[in-house]
Length: 611
Image 1 (cartoon, rainbow, N blue to C red):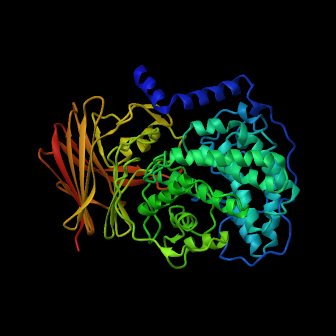
Image 2 (image 1 turned 45 degrees about the vertical axis):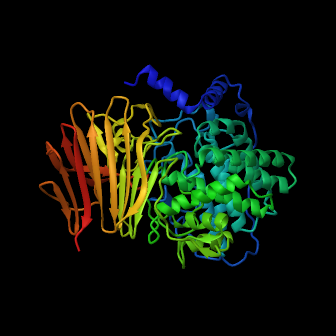
Image 3 (image 1 turned 180 degrees about the vertical axis):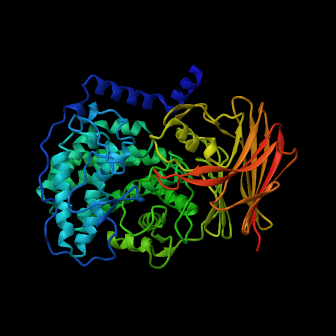
């Protein structure tokens, strides 16, 4: 059980301003005195998009949302022209209770439906983009379905009532998707009255709680700022006086949030590859809209931070398939889906941001990255980017080593903002575009506590667990205490055909873990020095799926091998069945190599391939 001092120190690390904002928000909601609880409006009425001649489609439309919907970009559900049930868990069919209540009276977690993200998923309006694309290709049926579904959503989700009005970020995602759909359907300059009213209602919901969103120091504040900026500038262009106020507030917050949350090394406050992509797509949409509205350029600091943020994601992305490590929280979010690409393909987002903010090409040739630019009328960058390089990750702890076609990620504990996972000194390894040593992922934010602890804790990562406890005490579903800090660090450096780096930490109980990496084109050597524990230290390597066999202290699968040697022999070495979640709300088995030690020692792990 975490101590009172741990809770107090964590509150201090979160920041008194943020804690005050959250407290004021919750108190205002509880006492029913917050301005947001007093909002009232009538539902918008369609049609929302008109039948007008359109330019030819510039690229293939999404294949999804014809007969099957796609949840979290992974799970398929059958659909037809009839709108979905906006209050049902589409995987289980269970419905949330009291869906007609004011949103602030609905609890965060309903045991009947499980994860509320399953309720919100249809209401993120991913299908609006897909149907807009199909309508652009000439499908009258797609336009009819688009208007029908939006109209049904407005009828069943009257303003500020029900679970789909509960989160300001969810409302913001709808605004951004509606705006991008309007671009696709050439409806920006003369939107239908129903669409204009719907945008207005959403901005009225977002504005009163944007301070609470900013207090999270995560994507919420950026998403809500972008929605205010996009929607506000749109309404301002249409002559609505409120639009200018929303636009200026959104612009101010966008610049402030990016300056605060995006570090000089390009890393993001949430320490998550997928949330980094969400942030980057959000900023790309804001910049596209700014250009459409002929607004003044955003600040030099904003532009500089977004450029390094785009490079940060490019550095971690495999250029052939677009995959990247499942590092940090991974909730299945993918904004601005315009190309037929797998959820794990990050190239469309990298290409778009690189073209917009750097005027460069991250990737050459046709593919989903090119289709995304085509749908958005964004020219490809003038110059090709140089090959991605190693990086120290000085501010946010994502230390990247690159050597030819090999890449290793070392997660150093550098927590200016709250960590979402206990992954100190985790290592991801990629050989020839294949993720061979892997992160466990997140699975679900509303899973049973043992699963939350497994995926978010030390067991879900390639590092060492000491004395059968986590690296940091869990204080809540999304909060750890006693944040670790990097003790020693050596940035990546090249030497005789290898790239090396080192980091260590020492926790408040005196446990010491130093990890040194040496990456070559065909493999990785990791040296661990450990001390200060009382009973046991368990080294885990989460392997790629396959029928691995154990031969002494070496695990083998075809040409791949993992060999572990140590100054003192392990008391146990085995391959156990573990779990991994490459996609949200999906878990599969994976082999995990474990070696257990009962005294301080030095361990050398070598992963390689025989040719």
